Image 1 (spheres, rainbow over the protein chains, first blue to last red):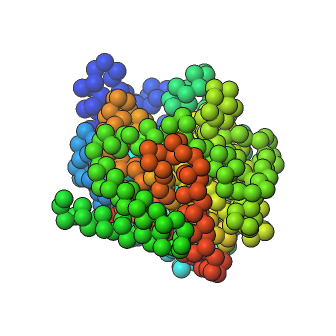
Image 2 (cartoon, rainbow over the protein chains, first blue to last red):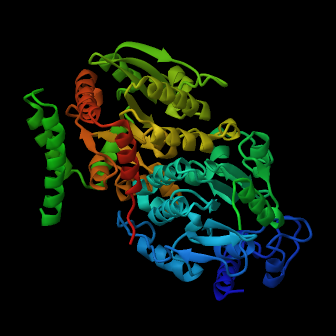
Length: 284
Length: 310
């Protein structure tokens, strides 16, 4: 376990005890069955509850370790950092939020890209990390994904994306919205070059992510219980004043309505991705 | 005035007079109007002034898509339905003649009275609306009609059925189709350019905003509720977002500003339509000579360049 994983957990924990009115559960306590795990236990089980199968969130670097062959991952574009085009200031400056997120997560932004091998098959990975400002997509996420498409096209490699994001990053205003068409332009170029994109939907994938590249993979698979909706459940409930179906916006509902191809439990994700890569013509 | 502001203003003047020059001999009062607009742009940077634009963009009497259609297109034939499930009324589409040639036009449609507002769902489309848009875009491509889109929505509708019918995917696919088109495309934000619901039909070669239109990633109220945890901070959020036309032009998100009659488009819809028509026609005229592949390539390059990072 890396030091940053520990930091993240402690912050969550601290917030939970400070906020005594509506105290949050410890992040390692299963919301499904209430079982509690040590961090290394969870990590060993790919952060899936061994008791009830609940899928806990996975940080970007850990996701990459779970999916790719040992030490096959080589990161690129890691030095990209966001600008502050609007000089945005809500309760604190955007630049301060960025710096805090970088310190807390050890990441430059909410997406990690690079090359890897999955069961010996070479590919490009674009993996999001929800703990960096809610996985929101601003200029850096858009640019990293676009470059991942370019690299995949020029190297003739398939691209696997793992989404986990609240949507567009509000602090970048209209330029954040422009990351939707930007990533789609890059993906169209990749598709026209004959490239393939497999989109993995992890909890949660909402808003701008679902309205851009995450929905446009050649194949879409989602983790069990992952929320994937354009509008979040709270917004929908407030707008419509209707009682939401129990599985509203979840992967299971999306499968039933025909928006994804398959629900893949985390333990099967690596072999399923390898199978898909082989079917699209990858060779070791 | 600081030198920075002056530079920005001169830049805008250059861009705006570019638009004007392309119109050639039309309207001798045009320069005066642009100058007046620039005067306003120069002054309008306070929270209050930006909020006035938000109110004008949402004004009940503001012309909507069909108001412009009847003023700028001849022989309009409305196209209904997504060919799958339903006809969605928050997005209208059709073909008609613009200065003698057939164009495809689609846009969000709001209603003016209570009944019509409900029928149009306040301009907030279900996925079926974006699927209707997609089929009309494909029709335009097949017959090499230029495509005009008019954007005026608070956002895509957040509802149970909308999610079940694939709102996110429909918005993504609508953009993907616009990215693939090889016919000239011009989008104009004529009121509210609200988030994903707006960008779904605004991935165009030329994106313009009317002088009092707004374009943003989330509504000022939504942003205030999330970031300030207080929806009454919407004014603050609106100016923090720089969602007005002049700022969007500075950020490189749009190519031009379409002037409105003094006091806003609602004061004189005929004049507003004439100004809109002139801008759209001049931009289409510019795009006419461009080879289809170059249109597509340039459009992609434009959107690929958006963002600020180091």
